[in-house]
Amino acid sequence: MSKLKTNYLGIELKNPLIVGASSLTSNIDTLKAIEKAGAGAVVFKSLFEEQIQLEELEMENELEEYNERHAEMVKLFPTLKHAGPADYLAKLKKAKEELSIPVIGSLNAMHPDTWAEYAIAISETGVDALELNFYTTPKDFEVEGKTIIQSQIDILKSVKEKIKIPVSVKLSPFYTNPLDVISKFDKTEVEGFVLFNRLFQPDIDIEKEELIQTIILSEPDANRLPLRFIGLLYGHIAADICADTGIMNGTDAIKMILAGANAFQVVSTLYKNGIEHITEILAQIESWMSRKGYESIDDFKGKLSKKNLHDPFAYRRAQYVDILLRSNDILKSNTL
Image 1 (spheres, one colour):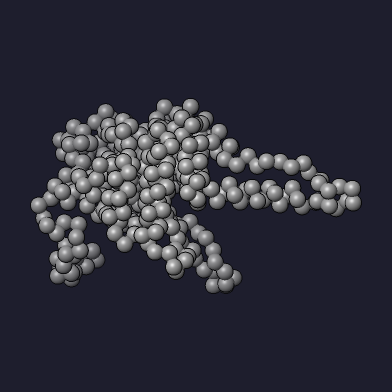
Image 2: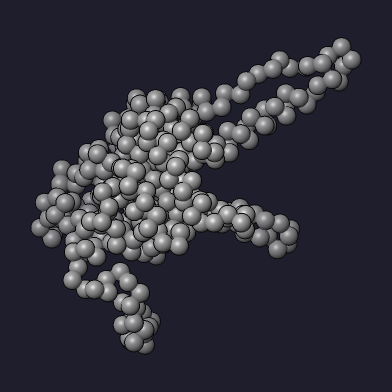
C-alpha cells in the first residue's frame, strides 16, 4: 500500500487513516491490533483536566471519610498526593514505545495555565504530535464570541511556544464563521486542523425527570459538514487538514481527500464494524485509486476543492437552488 502514503503535521504516514481518540486507543492490546490492521497513526485517548480534578476530589473525600471518629485520631489515613496525570502519561509513554506507527497525544484542559502545563507533560512522553481539543459550551450570557476565540488563540500560542512537537487543533463547527477562526489560528503556525470535534449533547429522561448522558455513534451523513469546510479551506491555509466525523468506509474517506484532506480519523465505524474494518477501508481506497489510475494520494487530493473547481457556487448555499427545483424528481428516485 505504498501508494497510500501521505504527510500530516510534517509526519510521513504510510496511509491517511488515523484512529481517533477514544476508549479504543487507551488499551495497549487494542492499539497493537489497530497497528496490525494497518492504521497510519493513532490518537491516544484524551487527557481531560476535569477527570483529573474529579479523581482528586473523590480520593480526598475517601481519605477524609473517617476523620475524627476517634478522640485521639485526627487523621485515620495518611495524607496522600493524588497521582494526577501520572498514570495517564505512563500509559501514553508505553504506547509510544511499543507501537511503530506515529502516536498523537490529545488534550482537553480548562484553564490557560494548565493547557501549557499538560501539553509539556504530554510532549515529554515522546509522542509524535499533540492534538488540542477546543470547544466551549456557552453558559454566560455576557461573554462575547470574540472573547472566547481570542482566549483559544492565546492558549494555542502559549502551547506552541512551550513544546517542540507539531500541534493540531480539533475544532467544533459552532463558530459564527469557522473559516475566519481557522484563518486566525493558522497565523499561529499551527501544523494542522481536525474538522470537526463531535460533541455529546444532553438528553432528558421524561419518567425520571432528569438529565441523562448517552453516547450516540456517528452516522454517515454527519460527514457532509466537514466535507464542506475542507473543500472551502483547501489551498487557503498553510496547515494540514484532517477530516473527522461520519467517515464509515473507503468511499467516505476518498470524498474527504478529494475535498482536500491530508488524512482522516475514524472511531464510530470501528465500534460498529470492528478493528479489522481498518484493513477493509484501506483496501477500498487502494482499489478505487487503481481503477482511476492514481499512483498517490497527492494525485487527487483537493481535486474537488473550491480552489480547483470552476463552479463559482461550489460549496455555497446557492448550489441547493438546483436541488429545490428538482426536489420532486430526487424524492421519486429515492423512493423507487
